[in-house]
Image (tube, rainbow, N blue to C red; front, side):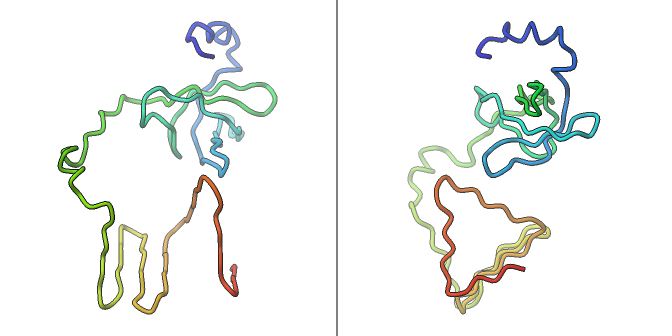
Length: 150
């Protein structure tokens, strides 16, 4: 569907187009969308032209159902978001160092709401949060003599 006019035949099929809510983005980058009846649909995202227009959990979206248990999210429903403003002037940003080192004699703790990351002086790293997700383009490697899960 490279042209908006390609959507015209779909409008005649009201069961194929519906509003939904994104519940999560899985590891493969597909969206799980909850439909009005409560059904979950695994969808792909029609690639947005504008940066920052991608969907995330809780977004209301327009979904085209393919009839085979899948679908395509055609876009996010909602008000136009303001254009992201740079945090710093691009020239000032370019003058910043490439690497930032935070160093302390004791622990370093980053805390926000119910989340916490602690870098212990003894080499331990502790992450406390309600949900933890990792996304990588390549390999996620766990190297340890022992890995304990639950």
